[in-house]
Length: 442
Image (cartoon, rainbow, N blue to C red):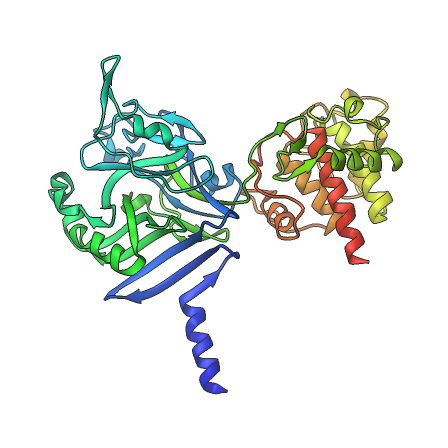
């Protein structure tokens, strides 16, 4: 029994699982220690690029990660920080070609630099062949590589492994850089030949030329690029920094789970901006349940206007009545709810604002409720989870993070964009799913 316990203890030192398809691994193998996030591309996870455009303030890895709504990420490519040591270049800019959700961010168009590759994924999250300098054509006075067009999320950085071959010995520019030629910690992202696994992380005490062979031998990398190192290096797994945080950066590779991103409505189904696809029949069931509970006076999809956004004052009625009817929440009459901007609210909803406040599910800021502001995904999920599970810790860097993680854990939401405005249809589905979840607990 002691031997089994010892083996299990050692294994726990080597690997820390974060989900069914994403795991954090730390280990020493082939004479080098490494820390990696392993992502199994089984249709439940994919990797996207989160970026800051040139000239805009750089952001922390944590912020870049939260911008696309998940909890594992690694820093991206080279850039010029806005720091005194980099006064020779323009701060918060990068010459790297980057693609985020089909949008190109590049000062060089689609021209790929010498010895670099664009490592990336198609719109379904499948790893694509790396785009390199050739073949290319001249368009409007600029070289363009049409292979870049097939990449939906990706980034240009120095090539380490191409089609299973270590190509670092060809990169004369990197070999001439003293920081690259000496043994040090180096970051990477790579995919396997069958496109089923992506690794992203760092290897300790390794030279640039030895990097490629190590990735091939240890992780069976088929295509790989190097990522930025030094003060930019950072990695987060399951919401916790494994490396860093380091300086603010311009881009990152982020793991998201689920395949529905954004808000799309079609005639046959609704893909909500909270990451779930429901048929219109299911959406109608959600609206009917709200109507019967007195949350809305509209009882059809056409009159309910599911694609419209909603204000905070409108949401106070939705969530307040829901909290009392479905979860039997009770108002705390001692809670101070003296919002200074309450007179600007719709008089027919000011009572609902007071109720939602005294239920402890809706809060304002600086003494204001901001009734006319549009409700965001982050706010909606925070309010809902205060109803479903009660108050959770609200860190200063993100009041909504723990609520979003909990909602994903119990299956109420999929992949989301926290700062996006929630639609009425998405809110209806959230309340419907929360009510069904409550019933499973009885």
